[in-house]
Length: 153
Image (tube, rainbow, N blue to C red; front, top):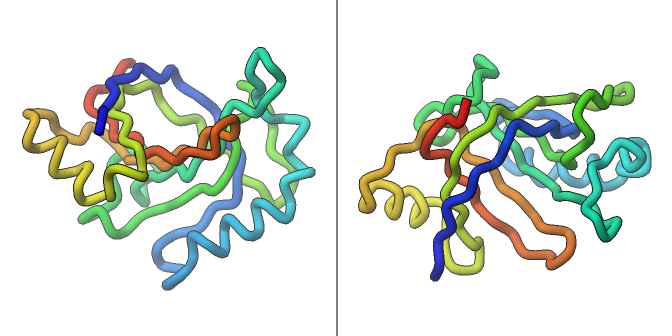
């Protein structure tokens, strides 16, 4: 159960936005819509050297949109989308977030649940410095939890 410490520069996510106020199952509905409409943003997606997509993010922020953690880790905004090139403008019906640079602890979702990741952060002397994000690596299909522990700005 390796936990990696990674620096992630500021990055752009274009996706479908919703909030915990939208009720149970809202995240799945956001992903269903984002996946169905993906061709609309595909040309804007950032790609790796091998041509694969850079990644898909379940980005989160508090209601003030300042990329602080969700209130009580249970209330906030969610953006289901793809990492896009900097400066990309979202098509109608899509939302663009520019996530600030952070140092993250990266947890493999197969080895850690969200509560276990938070326990690890606390038990190892770190504190959560911003909103937590979900990341899926399209090259491997693996999912990760990115917990910011230090602003890199």
